[in-house]
Image 1: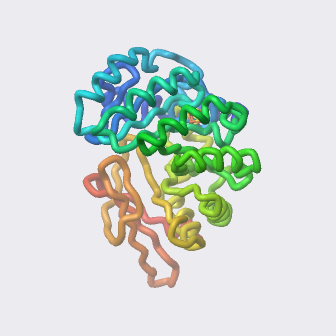
Image 2: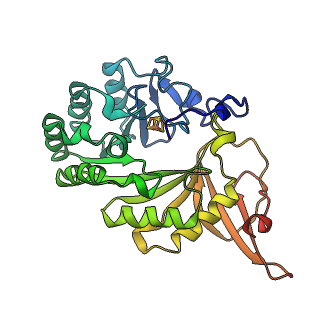
Length: 310
Ligand code: SF4
């Protein structure tokens, strides 16, 4: 997942597919949803995934990285409607221990914050960053006694659930930290119900809640290599979910700007896309095959895809 491919030279797609520039209230500080503030704490990563949706900045440019710690803390302390902070990047655990501690000290002291989240693939791709660093463990342990901390990580394939990753997860769990997983659905990597089903089972077995699967966004250099059509992706996830018990029942999520017209239909909500719900309807055609329709509230039509399922 970190080896470049010539397919990345394809010019299709966009650089900022989530409209991050329009949610930025200060350098490296985004306030999109009323209750959540997101910090781009670094542009460094341990992995540099080829499918990264922040390819425009991660490992490339520091122009969007949060530089003003005091301004960030002041903004959040003055916005009492904010109930949680997501420290992301890049990989937030690529920051120095000192910087992680500064953020934690500031946020654990804010009464209006319910919890703090760290977006990181470190448990998957560089677990020794945690396993071999008692100081970092102590920093997290101390803060987690004051405020609930979540690690939001990204396992995409069952083979990534290694002994070392498990060890790292166990360390966080012992410190009282909750681990949740967001996978990205990737063509040629994990776009099969069996594989995703196995991943969800493995994660729930180690106490990691697989709560989202993201549609791979139409990012330039990513889209044409990794994107699975949303309707096919939702079908894959639905099948994977049918192999789970309660905690393995993830949501499918799309979080990029919607440029296409999607067909509206309705039945049940299977996920969300920004402020839109993704609705799914399954019908049996006269010929007897199943037809799957997907729609987004407020947006429009999505085509059905019985041919894809066959
Ligand atoms: S770990 Fe996350 S931020 Fe870093 S390259 Fe991978 S997807 Fe991008």
